[in-house]
Length: 243
Image (cartoon, rainbow, N blue to C red; front, top):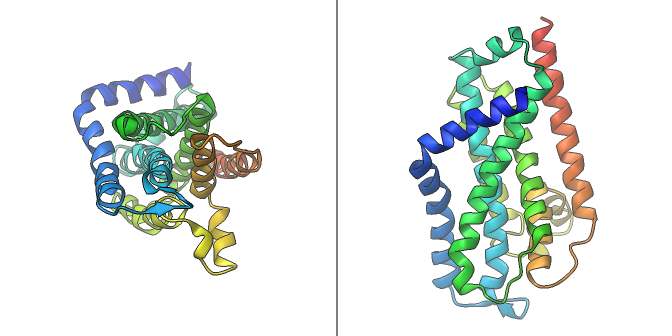
């Protein structure tokens, strides 16, 4: 019941700010598509560059949508509205609160990714997106929702959330196989980048889009990130409750 309550709160927030959320989800990715995809006419791995770019932008949108849906809201609720303290004294199981937040954030990321798919549908007819693509998008959203949840617990002020975006989300947006292939990166650095969650999501979605098998390694890596950050967020909130 606690999960449903949290998801209902996210749904009410989504309905209230529908146009703002949609605009925020579209503006940056669309600019990237126009500038990099249409403004720079080139190829990647022997294919039109848009075939490389679109899956990367879709994966990036699920990341930014999920992260932004959790990070700033939870920081404000915890530090100023004291909503987290109210949850701790309520009968709602804390794990249900966390799971509801994570699922809600992931669904927001899914919405961002699906909007990009709809916009690019007329110009990317050779790409394939199936049910497994959406599973990867959802899993990617879960990972970045848990990361956002952990960082929001660590935030000292509401201004920390934008800083985390600059320190973590922005570098991954450009480095993790989204706009450009990591093949030309220096050895060692390339391997580190390849194990980041966005790199794995981009790679799997791109393989599916080009009619290839996504493999299973990426799922294992994303599941590991989800387990680690999920465990940290649970430990944080239960430790705070027992203070």
